[in-house]
Length: 281
Image (cartoon, rainbow, N blue to C red):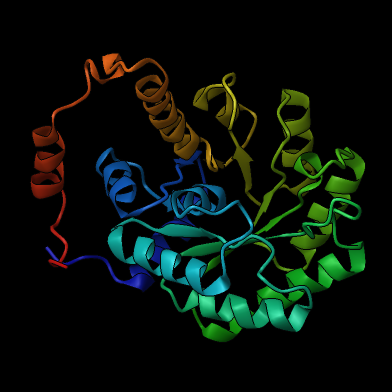
């Protein structure tokens, strides 16, 4: 059976946003992408932090070319749609955002997100008018490619030290009017906050970041959320297990953490048999 085309994956991804609620977990390399796909998830999303940490960088320190190569690898590895965590577009001005979005679309992703965070602790969000212009530029760049890429606009106030619900809603509604297909306010956690955002931008779909133990998929679906991502949390789960085991060896001279670890043969079987084999390097 042939793999789905980029156009097929983009159509599938757009259809997923039309009804129901789905989880879009975040792999950080080809192996985790293939494993998540093998579990039956209908779509995947890259994670800026998970990828950066796996490459030995802090989140936000990787280059645009590195991110584009990573998006291309995950999009080519997966037979399901992939959404790109494209951070703030790797440019400040709208024209730069538009050019970089064009390049991201060319990697074969089915969707991408742009955020309004500046990375400056003293002014963590772009001014409203600039943020809106950046969203419009991203929308125009996607339209110009002729591809049916799902565009998610993010307002980062709740994770950037500006947890103002009124301002978050104002931005998300403006982003929706500017052409965003999906809206996203990472950091909202309570049922009341989620309900407020969902109702504010309805009928457009909302992505919810789940990086904490609490609400279940059914709980979130009941609140009207269409898409659930986990950001870098799965990557941190893996990194925490690695760090705990390594520290035990270094500090205690013990290998006790190796007990119960799956055998190499089990992973080999999964990657050899359960998914289409990739070309040999």
